[in-house]
Image (cartoon, rainbow, N blue to C red):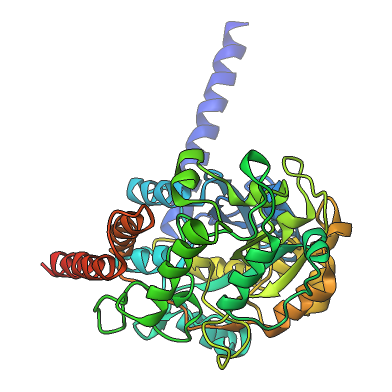
Length: 451
């Protein structure tokens, strides 16, 4: 019995020596071990490259899952994984910066404005896309409505655009005997607001509205230099359009009483979207992102038909539909280890993927507008409350102003100008003082940021 055990042990030892010797020979013969990177070890098949997409999009509001699933089905060599940041786009930008600083995997992410875009170019977070488009054989201007070029390069592709338009309560329009505006000025808007205002006290319906965070609406529909600063870096406040904006707000809120006073807006923390959907405001202007909301949501169901009008113009001689524009910008991380694949994702999300989501209006020129409106309307809770004809008119009338590419300190400048504008709207200082002090504040911010 003991002898057999010794024989077995000896045989096992000999076999181990042979196997060990074979391994040494194999390694010294110049043949490397099989590469298991990106491969499934059990099947030998190459594993798909994982690309992570970060944004604040939710399935309910943007149907992002549709695009992710469709991309993965069409691209088996890439696995697109969606990473939700937070529902607030502004907070999402802060979280994105923290992830970048911590070394988390970032491949593709969505930026919420041109200001966020230029700021993160300055931070070195974005990969220039010019060479990738050249390799693909894509001419940017043939593809997109928004010009994203910054310092001579494209650092992102546009997703959905947000151009300004006016939403109007059709029931209130009919009751006042007013037609749906198809080409109008800010003076016409003010006149409509007078005719649509009715009632008193808590039951009062305001004909129009001016946002507390949108204090320069008339400058917004200027073709060039429509932001806080001109291209030469000087403040862009001392002009007829900025003065018109402030004068209109004061007149509507304090003289005509056709818009809620600024003090009440602040005190109530007014949500103008909710006020419009509840019938407390007859018309409201905002970005085109608001269109889908007019078809009703679980929180704010529609109870009346909405019609749509082009953004009012400064002068009757201006072209109809000229509007400042912003949007969501889809960028590739400069730190991504798979930039080619990330670029492919960005291109898909800015074109057919966004159309498939069917919630927003893409800046992709090749999208069919009529089908797009049908798709958007089919994805809302109550499409019967949306007027397709007037919406199509607005989409076909849109003329986008040059995309404002603000400096990295633009948020600081906006805060400073808002502080001066607030004094004017509360009756603390006059218009000329507001413009003068606002210009001075913006100039100081420029100087401070040059140091």
